[in-house]
Image (tube, rainbow, N blue to C red):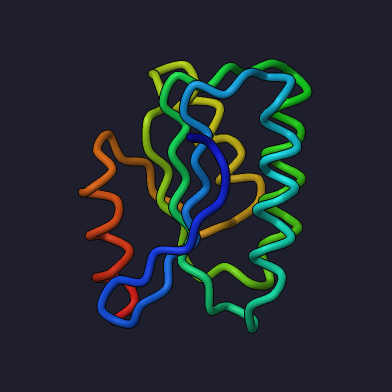
Length: 121
């Protein structure tokens, strides 16, 4: 089920934004919800995990991803994104470069989560 959840892994908190199979129409509201949750944490304290497997993209969604990346920037120290196809990876790399965020793309959810936990130590 799509939405936001908080993963507590060995006392490390990861904000998980689940966008799997989300339509282009529904994605912006879930991203806004994630931004609200993330903004409740101290500066540069959030580890963000985003699963975009089979998510639908359009120009509005791409603009929203860029907007949310900028909004969340003060709170997020690292982000791992999972599930992008090759075209979406190219777009994501452009957004990452544009926003200057510490974001890494992964193919597997567990690999992304493990990377976040390694980055926190």
